[in-house]
Image (cartoon, rainbow, N blue to C red; front, side, top):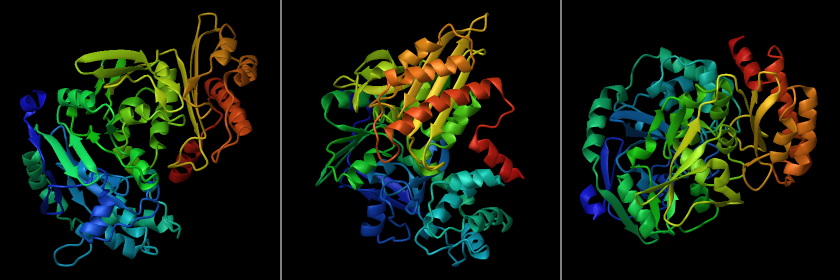
Length: 498
């Protein structure tokens, strides 16, 4: 009944490839964009490197409608499932050259500045710069570096590539994409409908509802379905784990899940809001949140990965849950027409096990804004500064009473246990103390009672426990000695402006 009210069913995938309308009536639910381009279309400019969304050799640019406006983003084609492109505009490196054979300014700048390397990573680098070209004018060096952080080139040579990014804006506008935006936008609007896409293939079914009501019905009807948001982790289940996912329910066409709303004393963030979407709102709460979001994967991952996916995935080393727990966030879960709200910290039960009942899905996360007098700290420690998963992520919130003693303490970590978790014993050691070295020493001494971390490829148990304590000490330094520089990001910013 809901499907009929929402506009019925459609069994054909539709998107625009360059200037061509593509319609596909049968497709495996987890066929990647990269495999389709290279194997079906023989468009081999996009390369497969890591097949897990790290190296950026596969980078393509996707145009999608965002509240009616056309928005272009760089994404990793190696972990993006082709059916998720319904209603989108797909551009690859093959589309950049002009009809007369002239190079696009991005390509010409790479030639002029000797930015091109062996040719394997170069197409992905060009597409990352092309997305920057489409969206921004005269970006700073640090912004250019952010845009390139998701492209790992083993030939080195980033300096000439950054120079090419600056040079491309000086070559004039020899770009047909800007003039075509209006027609592409109209074409995508014509493809937008309220129908549920139901696409079958030899390996299973892909279902993409357009309304939250239809989604709720589908999750109840298919309780064992894999819910796919940005696929920045689920994609690896396929490319690395060789798993077969059937059926797949894609949440990306449900616009109600993409909304981020400022409701005065809190933010309501829809589950399908991407990391790129929410960065401005979270940055307004704290500059440290801005730094955390900037280091959240590469730009391609931030453009695809979602808040709901990062939480529902239940990873013990996800970057966002510790800070959301420290802020006292609540999770909105939906089953049919019923809504259930729980504290985010209680959602995580055990490794990869969450308090999500059969037929439920993550609708939104409610993030309280910290009080003006609250002390907030966020730290991410990883082997590689950019585009890396945390070894330890710490997030702390303190409130001091009128007497200067700690009245409230919320200390949360990722990477220290099988779930993102508060340090209850360390919190108790802080309450009632003055915020000073003695308080930090007491909290650090209590951490072994809260955590028995594991050793793995990212860090040893001893390192994790030591770092967890050091982050509390950094918190004290930052809140009592503001003249002391404790952030690499600050030093990098100074160097780029020096």
